[in-house]
Length: 175
Picture (cartoon, rainbow, N blue to C red):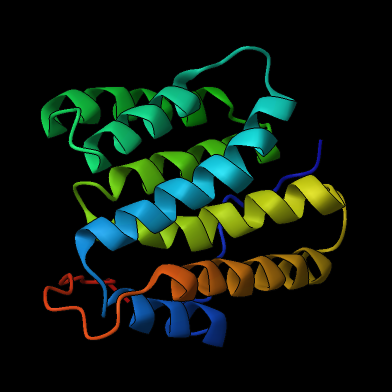
């Protein structure tokens, strides 16, 4: 099996930087809704199509959704979200499953750390590209697929973004 990359790494790409700037204008709740909704709609079906009955990523999405709706306490949600990270570690060697699980865990984790929203871009876009193109295609082609997905991810945030958000998050992208 060929070695695959586990995430996108070009922090300076326009599709990354523009999304980061938009994230910085939004509240934690808006970011969590965006990430969890995108992961549920786009990434969870990918993960479940390539795995056999591992419900940890679905559980992470469910508890994050429960927190967003005010039904679940943060401490309880964090424990379940950690299990999604374990699912990603357990999928070592399976590019689609591993990148999708990492992205889902990061998306769910935005309920307590908005910086994790970067995982939707760096892991999620690559998971979609691997799923649609395969892991054996050349990196440049995978990168183009991931770039297209990053633009869709940004558009999804634009669709729910709050104009003049009074309580935007503070994030440190570390790049």
